[in-house]
Image (cartoon, rainbow, N blue to C red; front, side, top):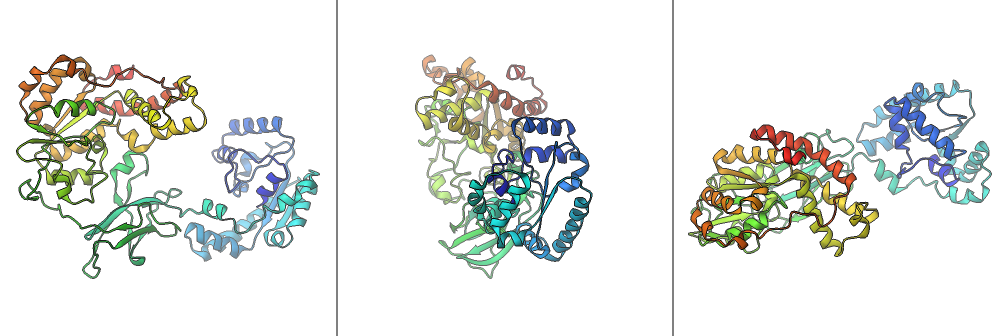
Length: 534
């Protein structure tokens, strides 16, 4: 409230303040004790602003760091009813109200003692009094700081809003991140956590047809979320199998919401689908009477030549590939009946599912795939992480904007185009596609070393015929077929040259992110990837 009034009266309070009006840049420097950075920020703001402000509720705890750093400090201290403070924290922090009151009283005592030691001008105000007489408060602040901006008083009064929804939501630690991924007649599952307290395990409230039936703790491991940088430990998954007393029918509405949040998890509500049981290994013969199951999977990576692989292998007389190229059964359509998946394939053929997104599936999904098709072979194409990423972004830019924006062609994207490119490049699931070592370990763990064939994308250009021969041998198809292919047909692949230059600043940032992936891959495979580093 105080910071909003100051800002409206023309006092610079910092950049990118957000609803809580806290100057994160200066606060971070103070709280890590970075004296050099503090002095630099203060000097910059002294030069730019005759009067400027800094709002941070915990500032008095770091008085020893910032004391003496400001040229002519004035202090505005706001006091509030301890119960109101405690109750607000109870709502936003899921904490005990009595403990909160004790802490509030201790803090107020510390604040009084701090103010008694100051030798600079101090303005004391009561939050409750301000709400009762907002005009008096605005005038008092103006006179205290000598601003002389009475023409702004009315606008400043409008900032005194005790029920700002934007502020309440932004300060609530119980705002959640997560998803209800599966809801069927056997169980529901997904993941959830508090981004502001990611290691705090929360209760997920499960609702059936808007009625609360259970609260499950979100603490199951999710390696995909950890590997993707979404959660620090990955211990935020949940799964609730319906007990005998809860009968779920197809079409029932299933919702999930993390305790303390006001919004349900993404994906809620879902209509319950018929659950399928893959708890035991199943052969193609026992899995159903129609269609077939894959003999091999192309598990990635995206923008690493899987389109070329699909085009080549679909011409083999003994190999059957779905016409849609990427089926996405195990990541997007996993709630569909198994017969839907089987109907993409035909009996008496070597069937393949080439869906590059499978490379970063969570381990639980890999286990399920192995249980269903334990003898399947795997293909993984590894492309230079930087080339792979930018090739994908080029396609996305063309799809979104048509002609390439001028500033991107010039290597200096701005505004909307920069935001778009960054979202595509640094999306966790997409970045994970370059972590080949993690994908190899996860799939090898369940299918074994002999099931997985990995190869360098560069072989498509350098030795396409030899590569196809090796692939055919691996998946059990006749390799002699590749000898009869015309050279022109073997050259069907996307150009390796960039149509749009990779902006140098973004490239450098991406190189830094991907360097550990290359280190890990070299160690795992015992090979050097010097050309990728170059």
